Length: 258
Image 1 (cartoon, rainbow, N blue to C red):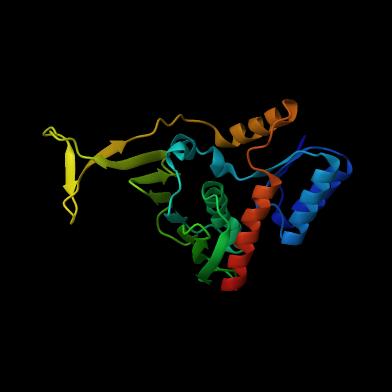
Image 2: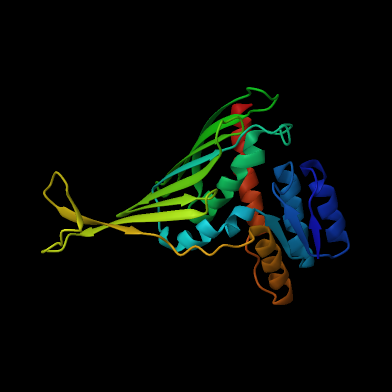
Protein backbone atom coordinates (compact mmCIF):
# COMPACT_ATOMS: atom_id res chain seq x y z
CA UNK A 1 0.00 0.00 0.00
CA UNK A 2 1.24 3.48 -0.88
CA UNK A 3 -0.16 6.96 -0.32
CA UNK A 4 -0.23 9.41 -3.23
CA UNK A 5 -0.10 12.94 -1.85
CA UNK A 6 1.11 15.28 -4.59
CA UNK A 7 0.08 18.46 -6.35
CA UNK A 8 -2.93 17.29 -8.35
CA UNK A 9 -1.30 17.34 -11.82
CA UNK A 10 0.94 14.44 -10.73
CA UNK A 11 -1.78 12.23 -9.21
CA UNK A 12 -2.49 10.41 -12.45
CA UNK A 13 1.15 9.54 -13.18
CA UNK A 14 1.77 8.08 -9.73
CA UNK A 15 -1.53 6.21 -9.74
CA UNK A 16 -0.67 4.57 -13.06
CA UNK A 17 2.77 3.58 -11.72
CA UNK A 18 1.11 1.96 -8.69
CA UNK A 19 -1.29 0.10 -10.98
CA UNK A 20 1.58 -1.14 -13.17
CA UNK A 21 3.23 -2.60 -10.06
CA UNK A 22 -0.09 -4.05 -8.77
CA UNK A 23 0.10 -1.94 -5.58
CA UNK A 24 -2.99 -0.85 -3.63
CA UNK A 25 -2.98 2.92 -3.19
CA UNK A 26 -4.58 5.81 -1.34
CA UNK A 27 -4.90 8.93 -3.51
CA UNK A 28 -5.70 12.46 -2.36
CA UNK A 29 -8.61 14.43 -3.76
CA UNK A 30 -9.39 15.45 -6.40
CA UNK A 31 -8.59 12.07 -7.85
CA UNK A 32 -7.15 13.49 -11.10
CA UNK A 33 -7.27 16.62 -13.26
CA UNK A 34 -9.56 15.18 -15.91
CA UNK A 35 -12.53 12.83 -15.99
CA UNK A 36 -10.82 10.72 -18.64
CA UNK A 37 -7.83 10.13 -16.35
CA UNK A 38 -10.10 9.17 -13.44
CA UNK A 39 -12.08 6.74 -15.58
CA UNK A 40 -8.87 5.12 -16.85
CA UNK A 41 -7.61 4.60 -13.29
CA UNK A 42 -10.99 3.15 -12.31
CA UNK A 43 -11.00 0.77 -15.27
CA UNK A 44 -7.46 -0.49 -14.68
CA UNK A 45 -7.99 -0.98 -10.94
CA UNK A 46 -11.05 -3.10 -11.71
CA UNK A 47 -9.11 -5.06 -14.31
CA UNK A 48 -6.22 -5.89 -11.99
CA UNK A 49 -8.16 -6.16 -8.73
CA UNK A 50 -6.37 -3.24 -7.10
CA UNK A 51 -7.91 -1.53 -4.09
CA UNK A 52 -7.77 2.26 -4.05
CA UNK A 53 -9.34 4.91 -1.86
CA UNK A 54 -9.79 8.63 -2.49
CA UNK A 55 -8.88 11.09 0.28
CA UNK A 56 -12.19 12.81 0.91
CA UNK A 57 -11.42 13.25 4.60
CA UNK A 58 -14.71 14.93 5.56
CA UNK A 59 -16.33 11.48 5.45
CA UNK A 60 -14.41 10.88 8.68
CA UNK A 61 -15.34 14.16 10.34
CA UNK A 62 -16.81 13.20 13.75
CA UNK A 63 -19.73 15.61 13.33
CA UNK A 64 -20.72 13.94 10.07
CA UNK A 65 -20.20 10.43 11.45
CA UNK A 66 -22.36 11.24 14.47
CA UNK A 67 -25.21 12.76 12.49
CA UNK A 68 -25.38 10.90 9.16
CA UNK A 69 -27.80 8.25 10.48
CA UNK A 70 -30.30 11.06 11.16
CA UNK A 71 -30.14 12.24 7.54
CA UNK A 72 -32.80 10.37 5.60
CA UNK A 73 -34.04 11.52 2.19
CA UNK A 74 -33.32 15.28 2.54
CA UNK A 75 -35.12 17.41 -0.04
CA UNK A 76 -33.23 20.68 0.46
CA UNK A 77 -29.59 21.06 1.45
CA UNK A 78 -27.71 24.27 2.21
CA UNK A 79 -23.91 24.10 2.36
CA UNK A 80 -21.36 26.81 3.22
CA UNK A 81 -17.60 26.30 3.14
CA UNK A 82 -15.84 29.61 3.70
CA UNK A 83 -12.11 30.00 4.26
CA UNK A 84 -9.72 32.88 4.82
CA UNK A 85 -7.36 33.66 1.98
CA UNK A 86 -4.30 31.45 1.63
CA UNK A 87 -2.05 31.66 -1.45
CA UNK A 88 -1.70 27.87 -1.41
CA UNK A 89 -3.94 26.21 -3.94
CA UNK A 90 -5.01 29.36 -5.76
CA UNK A 91 -3.64 27.95 -9.01
CA UNK A 92 -6.86 25.91 -9.22
CA UNK A 93 -10.51 26.87 -8.95
CA UNK A 94 -12.05 27.05 -5.48
CA UNK A 95 -14.37 24.28 -6.72
CA UNK A 96 -11.55 21.75 -7.04
CA UNK A 97 -9.73 23.11 -4.01
CA UNK A 98 -12.57 23.30 -1.47
CA UNK A 99 -16.07 22.69 -2.83
CA UNK A 100 -15.21 19.15 -3.90
CA UNK A 101 -15.22 18.14 -0.20
CA UNK A 102 -18.90 19.04 0.00
CA UNK A 103 -19.74 17.54 -3.38
CA UNK A 104 -18.49 14.18 -2.12
CA UNK A 105 -20.56 14.47 1.08
CA UNK A 106 -23.60 15.57 -0.94
CA UNK A 107 -23.37 12.69 -3.41
CA UNK A 108 -22.91 10.19 -0.57
CA UNK A 109 -26.12 11.42 1.09
CA UNK A 110 -28.46 11.95 -1.87
CA UNK A 111 -29.10 8.59 -3.49
CA UNK A 112 -30.23 10.00 -6.81
CA UNK A 113 -28.69 11.06 -10.10
CA UNK A 114 -27.88 14.71 -10.79
CA UNK A 115 -30.52 16.27 -13.04
CA UNK A 116 -29.24 19.82 -13.51
CA UNK A 117 -26.46 22.12 -12.35
CA UNK A 118 -26.43 25.91 -12.26
CA UNK A 119 -23.35 27.80 -11.10
CA UNK A 120 -21.63 31.14 -10.99
CA UNK A 121 -18.24 32.21 -9.69
CA UNK A 122 -15.88 35.16 -9.47
CA UNK A 123 -12.10 35.57 -9.52
CA UNK A 124 -11.26 38.26 -6.97
CA UNK A 125 -7.59 37.92 -6.02
CA UNK A 126 -6.57 34.87 -8.06
CA UNK A 127 -6.60 34.05 -11.74
CA UNK A 128 -9.03 31.23 -11.03
CA UNK A 129 -12.44 31.59 -9.29
CA UNK A 130 -12.17 32.38 -5.55
CA UNK A 131 -15.86 32.21 -4.74
CA UNK A 132 -18.56 30.03 -6.25
CA UNK A 133 -22.21 29.25 -5.78
CA UNK A 134 -23.75 26.12 -7.27
CA UNK A 135 -27.32 24.86 -7.32
CA UNK A 136 -27.63 21.14 -7.95
CA UNK A 137 -30.97 19.51 -8.73
CA UNK A 138 -31.44 15.74 -8.40
CA UNK A 139 -33.89 13.47 -10.18
CA UNK A 140 -35.67 12.66 -6.90
CA UNK A 141 -36.52 16.35 -6.41
CA UNK A 142 -33.79 17.19 -3.90
CA UNK A 143 -32.11 20.56 -4.37
CA UNK A 144 -28.71 21.50 -2.94
CA UNK A 145 -27.30 25.00 -2.73
CA UNK A 146 -23.53 25.22 -2.18
CA UNK A 147 -21.47 28.34 -1.52
CA UNK A 148 -17.70 28.12 -1.31
CA UNK A 149 -15.21 30.94 -0.80
CA UNK A 150 -11.49 31.21 -0.03
CA UNK A 151 -11.54 34.97 0.51
CA UNK A 152 -13.83 35.23 3.52
CA UNK A 153 -13.09 37.09 6.73
CA UNK A 154 -14.22 34.18 8.87
CA UNK A 155 -14.00 30.43 8.36
CA UNK A 156 -17.18 28.33 8.17
CA UNK A 157 -17.85 24.72 7.21
CA UNK A 158 -21.51 24.06 7.85
CA UNK A 159 -24.16 21.93 6.14
CA UNK A 160 -27.90 21.97 6.78
CA UNK A 161 -30.20 19.16 5.72
CA UNK A 162 -33.98 19.65 5.52
CA UNK A 163 -36.26 16.64 5.30
CA UNK A 164 -39.79 15.71 6.25
CA UNK A 165 -40.30 16.53 9.94
CA UNK A 166 -36.61 17.17 10.60
CA UNK A 167 -33.74 19.62 10.19
CA UNK A 168 -30.13 18.53 10.73
CA UNK A 169 -27.27 21.00 11.12
CA UNK A 170 -23.70 19.69 10.85
CA UNK A 171 -20.78 21.96 11.71
CA UNK A 172 -17.70 20.35 10.18
CA UNK A 173 -15.42 23.05 11.59
CA UNK A 174 -16.59 23.09 15.21
CA UNK A 175 -17.35 19.32 15.19
CA UNK A 176 -20.93 19.87 16.35
CA UNK A 177 -24.34 18.70 15.17
CA UNK A 178 -27.95 19.43 16.03
CA UNK A 179 -31.15 17.68 15.05
CA UNK A 180 -34.52 19.41 15.27
CA UNK A 181 -37.50 17.12 14.79
CA UNK A 182 -41.24 17.58 14.91
CA UNK A 183 -43.81 15.11 16.13
CA UNK A 184 -47.52 15.38 16.92
CA UNK A 185 -48.03 17.27 20.16
CA UNK A 186 -49.14 15.22 23.17
CA UNK A 187 -52.69 15.70 24.37
CA UNK A 188 -51.46 17.07 27.67
CA UNK A 189 -48.12 18.81 27.07
CA UNK A 190 -45.99 19.87 29.99
CA UNK A 191 -44.98 23.45 30.65
CA UNK A 192 -41.55 22.69 29.20
CA UNK A 193 -42.73 21.19 25.89
CA UNK A 194 -42.27 23.42 22.82
CA UNK A 195 -45.54 23.33 20.90
CA UNK A 196 -46.28 25.11 17.63
CA UNK A 197 -49.53 25.30 15.69
CA UNK A 198 -49.69 25.69 11.91
CA UNK A 199 -52.33 27.49 9.84
CA UNK A 200 -54.39 24.31 9.59
CA UNK A 201 -54.61 24.05 13.36
CA UNK A 202 -52.26 21.07 13.65
CA UNK A 203 -50.14 21.12 16.77
CA UNK A 204 -46.62 19.71 16.78
CA UNK A 205 -43.93 19.37 19.39
CA UNK A 206 -40.37 20.47 18.63
CA UNK A 207 -37.71 18.02 19.76
CA UNK A 208 -34.02 18.96 20.02
CA UNK A 209 -31.43 16.20 19.78
CA UNK A 210 -27.66 16.37 19.89
CA UNK A 211 -25.90 13.43 18.24
CA UNK A 212 -23.16 11.68 20.15
CA UNK A 213 -19.92 12.96 18.62
CA UNK A 214 -16.69 11.14 19.41
CA UNK A 215 -13.46 13.14 18.88
CA UNK A 216 -11.10 11.51 16.43
CA UNK A 217 -8.14 11.98 14.11
CA UNK A 218 -9.90 11.99 10.75
CA UNK A 219 -6.74 11.68 8.66
CA UNK A 220 -5.49 8.72 10.71
CA UNK A 221 -8.94 7.10 10.64
CA UNK A 222 -9.24 7.26 6.86
CA UNK A 223 -5.81 5.64 6.40
CA UNK A 224 -6.55 2.95 8.97
CA UNK A 225 -9.91 2.18 7.36
CA UNK A 226 -8.18 1.75 4.00
CA UNK A 227 -5.62 -0.57 5.56
CA UNK A 228 -8.47 -2.58 7.11
CA UNK A 229 -10.21 -2.76 3.73
CA UNK A 230 -7.06 -4.31 2.27
CA UNK A 231 -6.29 -6.78 5.06
CA UNK A 232 -9.93 -7.82 5.54
CA UNK A 233 -10.85 -7.63 1.84
CA UNK A 234 -13.71 -5.17 2.44
CA UNK A 235 -15.07 -2.32 0.37
CA UNK A 236 -13.28 0.98 0.88
CA UNK A 237 -15.13 3.91 2.47
CA UNK A 238 -14.50 6.36 -0.39
CA UNK A 239 -14.16 4.43 -3.63
CA UNK A 240 -12.69 5.45 -6.97
CA UNK A 241 -16.28 5.58 -8.22
CA UNK A 242 -17.08 8.11 -5.47
CA UNK A 243 -14.03 10.20 -6.30
CA UNK A 244 -14.83 10.10 -10.00
CA UNK A 245 -18.45 11.18 -9.48
CA UNK A 246 -17.37 14.10 -7.27
CA UNK A 247 -14.81 15.14 -9.89
CA UNK A 248 -17.41 14.88 -12.66
CA UNK A 249 -19.77 17.29 -10.92
CA UNK A 250 -16.91 19.60 -9.91
CA UNK A 251 -15.61 19.83 -13.48
CA UNK A 252 -19.11 20.62 -14.75
CA UNK A 253 -19.30 23.49 -12.25
CA UNK A 254 -15.84 24.71 -13.26
CA UNK A 255 -16.90 24.64 -16.90
CA UNK A 256 -19.95 26.78 -16.14
CA UNK A 257 -18.05 29.47 -14.25
CA UNK A 258 -14.96 29.64 -16.47
